[in-house]
Image (cartoon, rainbow, N blue to C red; front, side, top):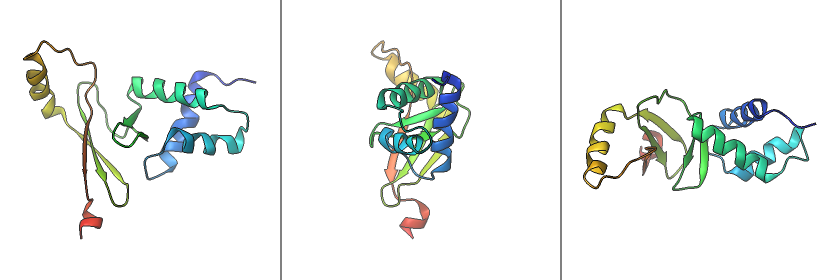
Length: 128
């Protein structure tokens, strides 16, 4: 029996929230297959696409992985600080960046549909 989209999205979010590190689509798939062995990769990719479109999850473009959204980004910019050593991701509200980013893209009449800022470095624990 096929699950409804909302139930599938909640399953994927639960997997993401249970892990303290970013997860690839295949890592998410492996976790879901424990309870549902017949789930296929396209189902996970479609669900992740819906979740990122809704702003309930973020795709880390630089490492091709996903994290659950932990902030409210109605009119904001998620700023994701990614530790290159331990892999943790801290999410920050970049609301104050939105006007500056818009001003930059307006110079070339570019119409942005989403903003995500990724910052790589070391978290406080790894830098110590």
